[in-house]
Image (cartoon, rainbow, N blue to C red; front, side, top):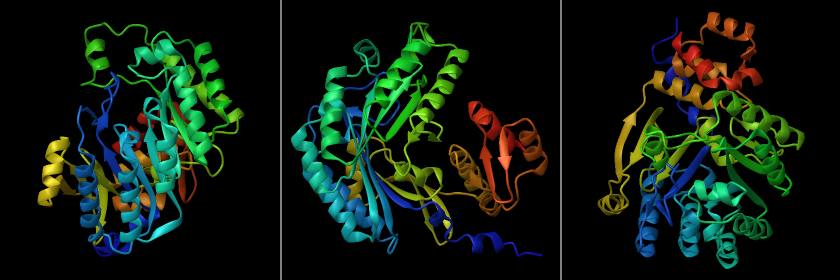
Length: 395
């Protein structure tokens, strides 16, 4: 019989199966979008020097806990990181290279909104070490951009994309579908336009109405009209898979499509349940120490975070995760991927295998496919992924 510590001892380096990355959160935007529930703020004055100092301080603090790890990805998210001074971005990248070993193919992504794209700034980001740009375009017609609260036009978005494509080897952009009054034909036309731009990665999100957002408030009082019903939303999802697949950009995750070898390495760290540092206001992280995975959350208010960094304590909480919680997170994240999950890794985290009866049932109704080593969700299962996951976790 195995000892109670068998699984923990066997999985001291579990995070290595997902990799190690660093997330830098820039909390400022030029305007707050009505659908956005991210930690973003509008500020007239930003002390860029103070933010650079704080980021560098946090990198040093975390480096003391993670010596010797190889960084495979860095991601500047927000907010609107393309509002950061290029010298701040370059200083952060240089410090990371000083503090940790980095992969030969280190991916460094910076999110950008079209309204803040300038050719000179993009060249400076590239020269500072950024290798990939992720653009928040969201729609390719002006009426819908206005409804979404975006401050750029379609023409500005396409011009910004051209600047990015001529500056960086890898460029991705986001689109939101299932928008107000959007038909299936409208979405097909827009999706084909996006794919025609010789892009290698697209993030395609169905509009969701989140509590605490302007859209959430409008929806609650019946003033957000024209949203598609459930059937039309499902048809749009199916159309997305078909059209992107025909272009050679299949989904590798529920909402993300890419050509071969163009997947977002940083997001794969999340979905493959690796470790990542979350640096900046409201940033979340997962950090394993001595075999124990911890969930970290930083203070969300920008001024509070800066003040706490100066005191060496910007984490609002650091919670040691129970094995069952780790197994649940691994399942929730990993089944979003087309590659699925390693069932033996799940069993090690949960200290028990997935329920055989549930696996058989979900296989028989065409929701999943199971081999001795992997569990993969089928196309049919992806349409009701939350229900599939709930059934797996309920056993």
